[in-house]
Amino acid sequence: MKTFNDDPKPGRLVLPLVLIGMIATTYTFINRVSSNNNLEIEPIVDEIIETTEPDSIPEDTTTTTTTTLPDEVITYLEEISSEKIQSIDLATKVLEANENWDNELITYQEAKDEFAKFIQDTQQFVNTVTEPGPPSTFAGLVKSHEELKSIAELIFADTEELLEGLTSSDTGERRSAALESFNNNMNEFQEKIDEIVATNTSG
Image (spheres, rainbow, N blue to C red):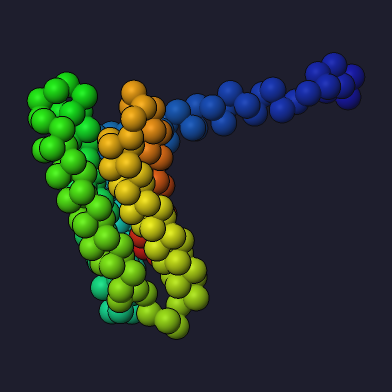
């Protein structure tokens, strides 16, 4: 009894036996895996390839969610996107004509004719933006469209002021201020369209 009590942890004798058993089991397992290694790797690769394909499915699903919009909303979004392109074209022409006048590449009469033509073009642009507008059943779109119409009216007023500035007796300050306002309103108009499209096609 005394000899037994001298070792308070008899489990120390069992632990090496457990370790030896684990090592033997592990060795046997590794041998089996290595002998079948080629057979086991191939189906694993197939599984990885198969799991990559479903990953692309959410992308397709996200894309198709935009098509759930009513047809009249999609048509409206296409219309204002086209109007954004028109606004970019109009802004480019106005800036080019103003720069040509500043650089004395066109005569005073040519500048007057071009600036007067911009007023007509912008009036047509306002008419295009005004009608037909969004479906009346979508209050959010109707409100946003009213903002677009208001900005388009400001752009029209800017083109009128550009011509007034060109023909004024000052040294170009009035025309410069009108051009700055024109650019700001054009940017706001285009950003508003981007906002409307993003709001109605996200998620």
